[in-house]
Length: 338
Image (cartoon, rainbow, N blue to C red):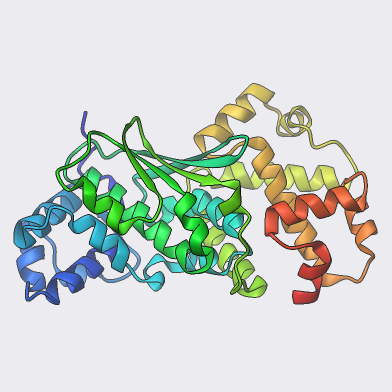
């Protein structure tokens, strides 16, 4: 079953970049866009290209260039600024773990036809991409470019550890399979049921030497505001976050059953609705605790032991371990940087 032609697939900025890349080869934008029923004016602003337009655009680009592996080159050349607030949040995140979780939460803002699920392993984190792109060559183009651009966002500050990454692509190896291994630094596999990027712990723990706490928080706020405008689940998430904050402010339990009771729904219904919104309950609780922790550390001079107590941690060492896992730095380092 193919997706409806009107389904948004990716932000128009990527179509503009593709036009620019091909223009540098002497292929005029009109040659690329006219057969797709598109004009340059339609690519302006924060709009999305739908499935019919995206499929025609990719087919025309492949036809004009005769380059089957064009998607890999495109992913490598996509500039940081093309990714908006999501790209800024990733580039200023404290460590790889935080950057990956930001990508999982907000990737759909740049590519609405995709959603991301995180799967925790003993020694790694799997970043699983679920997509609605049944048609080829569009699906292969988007998934290839997406994988390469993620590695290129992280590689400048991950260094040699990037070679420990593993990429599992859906479908059989294409004719240009060897090209993946010259573009990507991690190990490449095929025949997976869905695109899966595996981040070992050694990669997740790499700190970003260019991390900027203020820029990071501002970018994340922009992402959340944008998501609230677009996401049909935004009202649910706002209610759950409000309930968690209310319970915590009152010194009450934030177990899922307690929050479900506040919302007057069953715990099972809460889990189901959050899953539909792309969230797990504990991840939402952790995100709220992190936001509250950052706010407390920035805005008052209370001892860190008191901050830990207010957040519900049994002691400061447990709080410090959790905070370091979330942000890649200690609470004290965060407070000093802020």
